[in-house]
Image 1 (cartoon, rainbow, N blue to C red):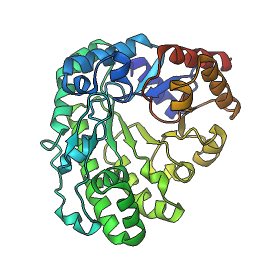
Image 2 (image 1 turned 120 degrees about the vertical axis):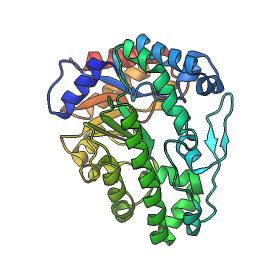
Image 3 (image 1 turned 45 degrees about the vertical axis):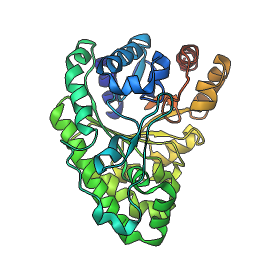
Image 4 (image 1 turned 90 degrees about the vertical axis):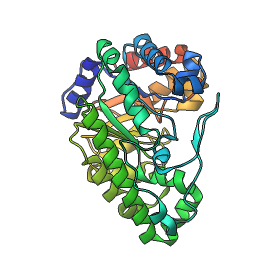
Amino acid sequence: MRNSSWNDLVSLTEGKKLNYQPVGFIIDSPWIPGWYEISNIDYFSSDELWLKSNLKAVNSFPDIWFMPSFWSEYGMCTEPSAFGSRMIFLEKSLPHAEKILQGIELTDSLPQPNVKTDGLLPFMINRLKKNQKAIIEADHQIRFAVARGPMNIASFLMGTTEFMMAVAMDPNATKKLLEKITGFICDWLSWQKECFPSIDGILILDDIIGFVGEDEFKEFVVPFFNKIFNSIDAKIKFLHNDADGLITAKHLKEMRVNMFNFSFNHSMKEIRELAGPEVILVGNVPPRDVLAAGTPGQVDAAVRKAFCEINDHDRIVWSVGGGMPQNVQDVNIYAFIDAVKKYSK
């Protein structure tokens, strides 16, 4: 994010009104390589192409808050790599990590990663260090410490079906696994902050938390996320969950979250009523079916629908209900920006 945009975001958390309605998108490897016309392998392996593609994005759309901005990541391989997962990288498809935990009872066999040395994590830090000067010269800073959430990482290590069965059938062992992963996440966020003191935000991404009921959410989500979002001092505590988010929205305060990106299947009004007036909402246009596959007219209509769902437009970053998907074209991004300007008058 540009320094001025970051300052405006912090102002939103403080309850101040902006003189415009902000547009923002979570961007990373699903969108940037194809948009920049390079392969996923080139994006992940070349610091130069990673920097150039991110610079082009922020310079092509100066009116947009790109979040977390200059995200050093290796897709879904990032965190599992530190636990020892086999990583598979493909030219055109997204990378993935193979599961390594054959049963919840084997949690003790998992190493407790050293975030300074293990997996892809040192490469992520080094990429930012090598490019920090260029990032600062472009009027940006490294603002966010980023990680996937504990249930998300657990689903990579075990498999989603296997992990969800463990939640239902062996809650004590599940908590033990989540405690180990949560400790890793807290260490990882702290190390990012130590390496880059400009960090004043946390972004946690976890869709698996949307797969559990109310009781399970209180037991397996709230205490671990509370610990994660309190692990470093940060003004912005941003959660992404584009699976079912109604239960999540009810518990954001307990989780210490003040910014929420949620599924387009929920209306702005119902999420606001559940989350309360203090939380910054990030949404809420369908990412794949509208922003990626729709026409500019359909983008305009979807933005209008989102505006009409809620009367109070304070503390909203107009976005999609999820991250920026693959194959989003410039014409639809411009249509989104124009629609927000039009309907905010």
